[in-house]
Image 1: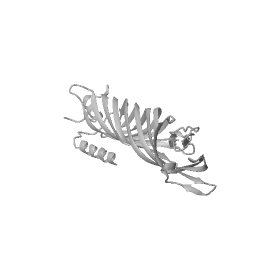
Image 2 (image 1 turned 30 degrees about the vertical axis):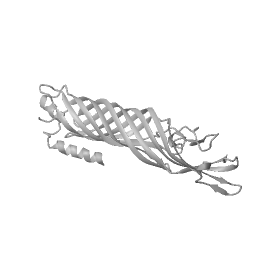
Image 3 (image 1 turned 90 degrees about the vertical axis):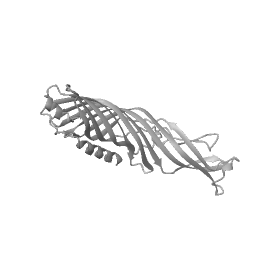
Image 4 (image 1 turned 60 degrees about the vertical axis):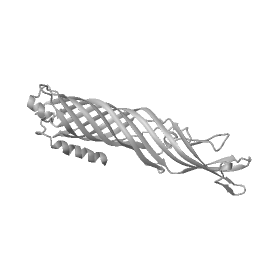
Length: 301
């Protein structure tokens, strides 16, 4: 919501400085660009015990843009970074073991976990749409290939026990190990190449033509979104979620949800919304001076 309000205010401010209307007269306009952006990123899933909390995302890229008589085409290459948090409902596991006196008991582990996912992609986005009066709107697809991924699992686990022979329960006994402990650890996650639906709505907030030059410089602010179409996480099915130290049952390793095969039954996809800033430079070889000025949606200074 903050990004949308910022985008609208910027457009309204720039409208007060606009001269003329958009018209290319059928000429082709070619631009190279660099871009950067930031926003909110999260995961979408039907996993019953997972609550996405979201996080921060950012992107940087270069590319080519074509305009002709209202048509807008954009092809680029970019790097995209995501950092997102997800909370798990408290989950439980029971394991047979022995107490400090060597008696057989059933150990109960209650794990309160949250995961922080961090991953980086190299991407090729392709968008097509319409351009009018400095505004543009378009949609398309983006192919992303993961180049790094890391998941941090952190939280607490509480150990209690039951002597099933005598029906005795043990809890809140720190001297015997039946208490709460903290854990945190980094783990690798296997990610799939991703195809995403993308969309963009933007406005040329600044634009100018240097004196005696046919080169146009444009600064654009855009509202941007993406939504994954295929499963992001490729689970490592051999990993268990809870690994107990064989010599000390109070020491455990908690593997994060996304690296322990738990996503095999459910599709997990990312989505991202944010603001993107793009600097474009280019022009047309065929447009006359006046037509070029309008086609670039430039301003008098």
